Image 1 (cartoon, helix red, strand yellow):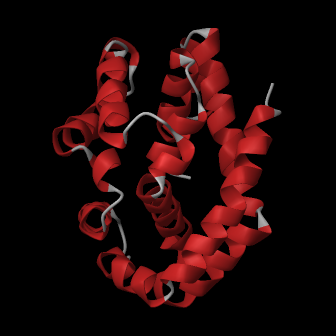
Image 2 (cartoon, one colour):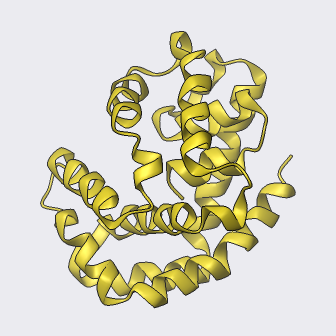
Length: 191
């Protein structure tokens, strides 16, 4: 899962949400510098990553992309799944997506002093262009893929990922809809 799902799945616990949001930017023992509840969010992020990366439904999505995108397929699937969460937001939340994302950007700013530099850099662009809200639109995830493609060390072809999504849209959406409740159940059992 990518950013929107990680924020959403953290619920109303702000420090847990912060930890879950910054999880990809915190390596190994770097976690020890954060307050306990943020550490718990980082551990939750890692648990979500492991559950997602090894789940058979998600593996189906990745296999469909592997020939074209190689080791970038998991990242692309994460963004696809955020797209489906955003697109179907009213199924998951009574709070409109625009309000939800605006509130998230306001909350995360209160933690700016402890966020990793990479998160702060990304957050400037993310909040300015409201990536999380725009994930519901193909144009929004296209911008995300183009930006990610520019930052990869190797040729990723991620700028072509929206076309791959269009080619198998209903299959990816069905896989997301099957997987996301399982992820929610997994998170509900997280200690």
